[in-house]
Amino acid sequence: MAPSPMSSFMTSPPSLGLTPSQLKSYNEKGYLMVPNFLSASEISTLLSETNSMLSNLDLTDHPMTKFTTGDQDSHVSDSYFLTSGDKIRFFFEPAAFSSQNDGNLLRQKERAINKIGHYLHELSPAFKDLTLSPAHAAIARSLGFRDPRVLQSMVICKQPEIGGAVPRHQDSTFLYTDPPSAVGFWIALEDATVGNGCLSFAAGSQKWEPVRKRFVKRTEGEGTEFVDVQGGRFPRGEDGRGGEWPGEGEVDVEGEEYMTEEVKAGTLVLIHGNLLHKSEKNLSGKSRFIYTFHVIEGENEYDERNWLQPPEMGFSRLYDYSGPG
Image 1 (cartoon, rainbow, N blue to C red):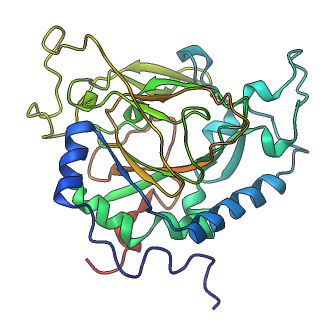
Image 2: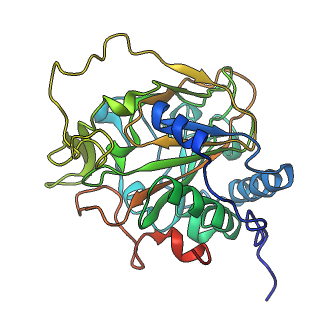
């Protein structure tokens, strides 16, 4: 059998996971940047795969679903989105359409897509080899995962001039386990700068900002909604409160400040599920392609209300693909 495009990706030599200093930094700030995580050739392979998917996108029967991340009422929630957990689907930038709301694109499809998701880690050989790798398994072990499950993966395009801003949010809002456990693995495929909408972080906010809301399917009717979290609001053991929040007035959140972090292509950024982060609109003439996937603790409860439901085979077990250890 011929090897897949990246069958040797990050497998030789095996990663030993995070160093003590890296782990300390992650625990303090809630995020960690690992430069040069991918080589130039690996980045090229992933960009080629992405551009091929965009070029081959057939719009004949596409519902032209727009991906929105603004206020709670406008978040995307159609069936095309809600059934994308075991498929590769394409979601458009709202600004790529004419103002008449007639469904006509103002630019080529390749420059109109907001993101591609959410099952690249199983259906795309190149992205599968990247995601389900010994290096990522070693990082998960460093972070204390017992049974890490990859539940979604995306290429986010942040298109030139129209790539929308993403407001402050926590990843565990959208991928809730009880108690919270999500960690984002965010990999720059192109340089991310202030001009094209790099990430900004409220460093340390994972220590004091609980997961207050979760994004779920409506119990009545179609679509999605945000509801109050009834279970744990912090990861178990991290804050010494067993997943509970101390309550109003006991944490000083005044003066929330964001640190803007520009990164070079090939950089891995680890993002704690409770960490507040955001990105601004891409006002430049350059795209900001990134690949991201999320891991949750398989031992924690992931219920049927979550918008993203497991495929028939279940969420991908990271340790199953990582060799001995």
